[in-house]
Amino acid sequence: MTYIIAQPCVDVKDRACIEECPVDCIYEGKRSLYIHPEECVDCGACEPVCPVEAIFYEDDVPEEWESYHAANVDFFDDIGSPGGAAAHGVIDADHPFIAGLPPQNTDD
Amino acid sequence: MTTQPFRVAIIGAGPAGIYAADLLTKADRDFEVSIDLFERLPTPFGLVRYGVAPDHPRIKGIINALIKVLDRGDIRLFSNVEYGVDLGLGELTDLYDAVIFSTGCFVDAPLSIPGVDLPGSYGAADFVNWYDSHPDVGQTWPLEAEQVAVLGNGNVALDVARVLAKQADDMHTTEIPDHVYEGLKSSQVTDVHVFGRRGPAQAKFTPLELRELGHVADVDIIVYPEDFEFDEGSMAAIESSNQVKQVAKTLTDFTMREPTGAKRRLHLHFLHAPVAILGEDRVTGLRTERQELDGDGGVKGTGNFHDWDIQAVYRAVGYAGSELQQLPFDAKRGVIPNHEGRVVDAEEQAKAAEADVIPGVYATGWIKRGPVGLIGHTKGDALETITHILEDRASGALTGPVNPSEDAIVDLLESKGIDYVDWEGYHRVETAEKAAGEAEGRERVKIATREGMLAEARGHVSNEPAGQPAAGH
Image (cartoon, rainbow over all chains, first blue to last red; front, side, top):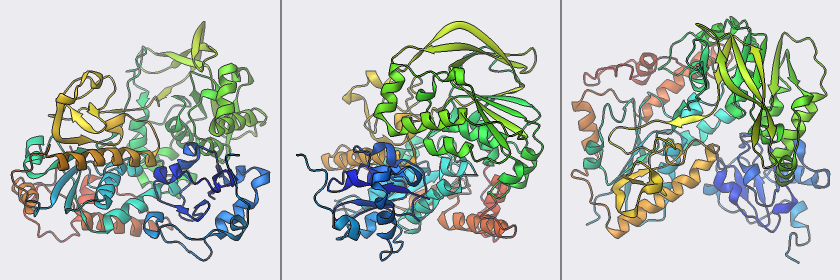
């Protein structure tokens, strides 16, 4: 069980959620943020602070963004569980699904 | 002149204090810091240990993140040391450049309605302390009432209602000690009624905690269609927030559930404001006044009253801060008056001026801003306070301690015979709790007394100087 970051975050990365997360489990990729499915404690603090409403509990991800579920989880296949995003630093990569998206959430 | 490290004392080792310590050690600075963290209980972690419900083990997992901070070894912990009893403000300012208060809010906010002091009327915080086996509360809790009211519409109200309604055997898998299990097992409760003053779209529940109610074994969730009023203000709230939308949807879904004949029922009532707790010499009922929405997210009374047959009332109307010795207190807001974390010497925060700042004394967390926001929210608070400390150091606003030696506090505590517990001691308590859990196939079983925790913390080898075990503060 975990929260998922969906399309509204891509190319936005506001990072308000990172400030709020009590366990530092929100990792920064190149174009999006990702919530670590095992490190997340399901407290829900991130969801209301996201200014673009990109964060959903996994059962509530809107259908059109269903692919973001797997992208969030699988992103950590190679990374494992570093146990803290701040110390791990920005990851210079994205899940292939997100990396392959055309520019998102542009102003015009 | 900066050969001595910058000495900081943090009072209160809950999440607010630990995040402040963590942020200060990680702050961008060109001088050494040396941080001592004080805690009045034998163990740290505040409301994560003694507030989060035992059947929420994942959220309790926040403790692991806090442990990681203290495991680094660059922050010293002195538990079982109470500010205002064991140490005064002057003793701290003599030894530290800066003192941060992060004492939090851990008592019930007052509710002024007739009958509130009748036997059978309980504060939620007291009940939470009991089921979380806080060492300073008694080990028994009266659970003979069949019909129980829970006043309030936040997550604490849900915690209390859920723990009351849940079968004791479903709680036994958690970290609760035997006396809590036996107490819950003896409960006679059949109906738990939660009362919210406002409507379903104004409830302060978080969506996940509300949904969880629907999965509690052998409990029927009952809501009343006549309570489901959504005015313009409600629709606006639902439109503007995913959270409100989900809460309203979950509650509406509950209206479609058929009772299954479960042993216990959990009723969620809305638009009922408690106006009096009824009874001669103990609680026998609750009077509520029907409310109607005013269009702006508020409610007004209709003059229609309803009496409920209730034998116990739990008031979950929020936590309140407690006044600390030798420090100003804003009784209205229940906080230490402060400007963005700088403590000011004025009874009312609003009337304080820059000139009233008490140099070297700071606040963070709930005692700084009041009991609102989730655990992680306190990180932003800590950042603000820490930033001001660093500014004050740079501007020369801090006079510096009389005795900056790191050994001075240890000498002081030992000279006073205070049996403090350090971080190693906490690890020994944790090891013992986990071992007790393992024996029963549980994650942990909490030690419920100060004496028990202190004995484990000492590692059973007592070659400490003859410290008196701190008599239950």
